Length: 173
Image 1 (cartoon, one colour):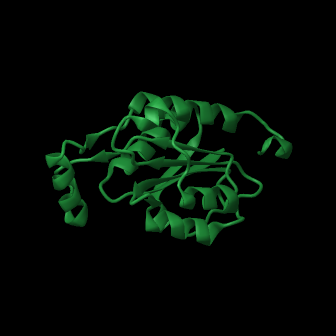
Image 2 (cartoon, one colour):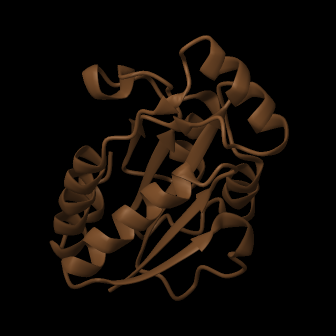
């Protein structure tokens, strides 16, 4: 089975989460292709998809939104999971925030089995407009790395089990 792990990131934190997920899938014996969502031109050769996006202003990364638009309906017969990365606090670990509207669209359009939100990372070393925002948040004590690698990896291991376990179309929510 070959799994596509695609992602949209600006500061690199969501890309690292995607790398952690890909590593767990590979450790479970799955073939994995890890790539930015903007670089995906064809999804025909993949048996499953994990799509992740950084959250900006309560929305998904533009590259991931475009991915959803390009490949809407293409995964109707293959399992899909979604993740968001972005709360700059521990809210993703203490309770599950509801999916943002772009994630709800992806849940419907791809269609996906599930969505999860992980904490995000925003440091003062960020560049461009994100760096400006990060510096202000750092002054206010709100910047930092709120990702939980253990939680991400545990989620990825559970997804790997689902991928490797034959299921029926009726199992899809």
